[in-house]
Length: 279
Image (cartoon, rainbow, N blue to C red):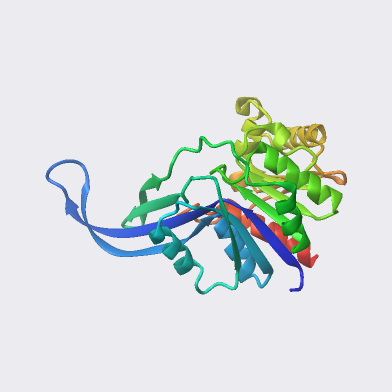
């Protein structure tokens, strides 16, 4: 497609190790295992960027790459994107946070544990100035912010992106783990899950329980208060809810057996953006 999409966000490297149990350990209640296979894939914003590129969309990916990043990680980045038509635009910045690596372990097809190799984000420095945002908007027709709060995007930079996209009338889709409501005010489209909704808008989850009608009303109230044009909240097995000026809509989900939920939110956002483009 001719539409150019710019993905801005935190790249995460996902590693998967698969094992087969051969017997129980005599030393304690744990299996003795043999490794079967392993794989590696782009995670975080890299997941949605890859998904949109695989859907045939002209996609640019903007992510932070520390000047102190290890050579092995740089090599891994080239490896995970080597078969992708995705255009990589790493920003070499002052933020010294290295790209997080999440290592998942599976035993007999069951998710056993995850090892997160990352530094705690204590850097409030923003890599985003208006010149950088203008550069991104000049080269893209639609923007997606996939913010995992790993150091690339903060509240100030997110508001700058929202303001610039609004000024230039560029559709902006946001998926963020930011916990400050003022970060997403005036957004064109915000996609979050129910847990993130409850945290972001300070909602007591026990009040709502599983009443979809009450949840729909509350989502619209919060949408209007934050001046968001389109607020999409995924509610797990119950589907998703969209609130905008036209009304409040609940889309039920089909019941399917799921082994691994990794990247489900990214897949949903990619489908949402794709449907918006082809409508």
